[in-house]
Image (cartoon, rainbow, N blue to C red; front, side):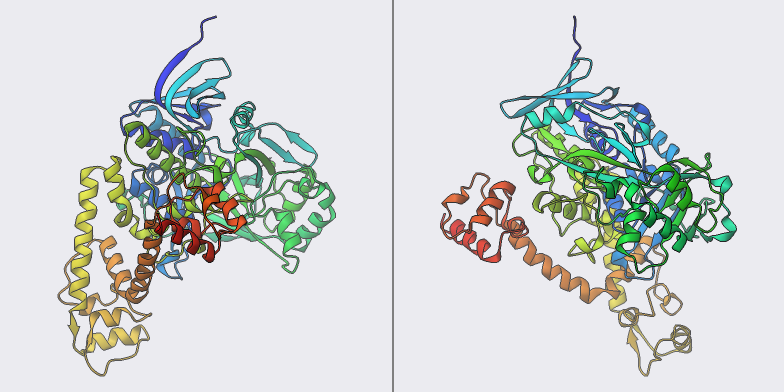
Length: 623
């Protein structure tokens, strides 16, 4: 029987958020790409929450966009509400989040894939990797077709041996009732890949017509919408927005849950996978936070053309009758009807320690991996890894150096470094607290930090790069002007200070010193800054932040200098740690597993002490 054989530069397995970014980045670099999905209707599917961005995740989306990725552009095309989170706090933790029209988000991304040159979309289940002498040469599908390629990128998400569970019901299916991938795990294990079994969950979707919104608090979007993509014209995203709604659980809700815990798969032992610590089910919340008499519940629309509402904050795997009862105790949901039951999902993923910082398997050359398959959680984390896996797989094909962002350059650098150097025992979630240099890694300056890399790779146009270069010059020129502008005492100035509850001046002051006051900023002093010329809003924002937080920024820059010194001390790839005297046994074991690229990375490995680092430095110094 004839068997199909085709040849591509890169094969991408999976078309979720990671797969889409990986395939698009590679195709845009001129390589021939085939992307496999078990169902073309699941391209860029949002099986859980209906939003993109959020705390720390908004940073990732901005960084993806700065590097030339698609997620930011796609959510700008398909959002129905936008909100900047944490505005009452400092700029380091400001995070943009947008509610998506789920169906439109998926359709829009699918259109982009299907109309990108050099990119072929194929509905098929990949069942086997072709590996010869430690090098991945291609893949085989369930039909027996063979696809040879120079590199392969695994972006299987939560589909490998997926099992959806609620109550006593267990189905071997993927999210939203889609087909699971049931053969690939065996092939991976046969090639020595270490697998984990993780679990995540999602809340019910309910019928909007059965909700009493009068009993809930309305949550509106921002009056002025800020786009995710640096390429999006802000004028194009000022739309009429849809509201979300806030309500709460209560003691009746909690009592129903406590009485039925024995029927929860989480507590009965039916679920074996490890779940995320920072995204608890409502069952876990009630038990672990027993002192709280209520928990927030957000009702979020799934789209403009559906009545489905997402019940944020009430993820569960309780039986259907328990779900029905507990949801109806929530204020405003007394007569609610469930459209889709909440469920937990178990799936196979890898131990990410097997990957290099380029997201390539250390023991299988030419095999890359990105997304939830790497032990992470979230659409944004997945897309960021997919983009980097796509870039680095392409660089390998093109014979160019990998792009590896370090922890001082990007949240993406923190994300990947954490995955490949730290022991992951649960689905990894990005948080601002994980970034040591978060004041430098703000979402508002992602283009200033990363556009140059996107341009060098070939994913950012010359014009886009030139625009950032001009923006940088405008910012620095204005900072210099502000620092050398001296304001005399005037009636107008004193009036502004009084209105802002700021101490009145006894003598003149520099404009920069006034901006550094907590209650003042660059924009509020415009009336008395007579030499100011027109500047774009994003330039004004950067000027304000750089002046107001000047001391903190300089302190972090000094810390980064020390960090860079450690990162610059490379460790030979094939160093024999057993030959290093005075190195502790635990350190030897961990270093042989992780194979760090440099001293900085080695110092972040659990089980490697500062004393061990000193021993390695002495050893390398003698070489």
